[in-house]
Length: 364
Image 1 (cartoon, rainbow, N blue to C red):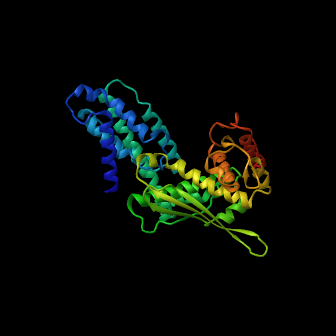
Image 2: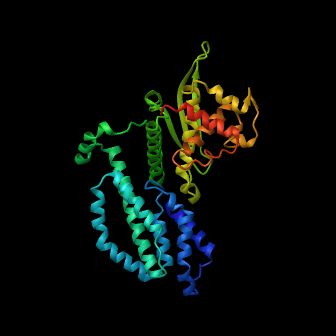
Image 3: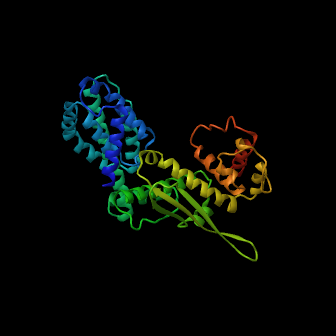
């Protein structure tokens, strides 16, 4: 019901946006299909989506069926009857990594479809999004099968055993899915996959080391909350009353299950930011041998000495610990992009903060 409601809501929004709820002018209807499809793809941020993102492909196909010439959809379905079974068989025989690679290739070509013929345009879009949906479902099936039945596929198990020495380590998380079902459970399973991917990446980059892996393993909790409240996390440490020695306890991520298109389209970025922020607290207390060097960049004790341009966010101005966590999160978020602020920092303070992390992880 939740998925159906979302589909109806978004479809209604699109129809109102273009003012095409009435089919009085068929020429206008045909001419606008290009605008409709472009708007849909931008609204759902398909360009930035991954194979693990929310499944909006049925919704996209529903819109195509409603707004495209009927013959284009009939032709597409006829073509799929002949080609889809073969494609499914091929996809079922390749590795998850190869599926992701093929998914990205088809997604890119789908977004680049260009023709002035509405019938041809709709046919190609419908076929391509059907293929993308099939690949996404196959990838999810791979993931669920590995979680529930690790040895269910002997050939896959044999391949994994033969390459186990080359596999990258990761950090296990506690994914609290109690009372979740349907789309919410799928969302939680995808979140766990996102966590594993990010933690594996942090280990491969040397930002987290084997000792961190041991410390954090099964001490990252992911909890899920209904509604669209802002996603947040918390970092917990234990401190000896006598020696004042600190010990890591747990890192909690409290994730909202929100079904708005904007939230779903940007969820991977949100999750990466909150995970990196909480890990920034861990690094501040347990990895950085000289966090005071960072503290003094914009603070004299608890007094801020920098203006707003010296912080990555407004929240970073709250305290030295939050400044550190936010700065680390922004640094990590931009590692795989061209450094927007690295080559031309917005302030001397930002440059010094970047340099602090560069030196901290210089050996990696």
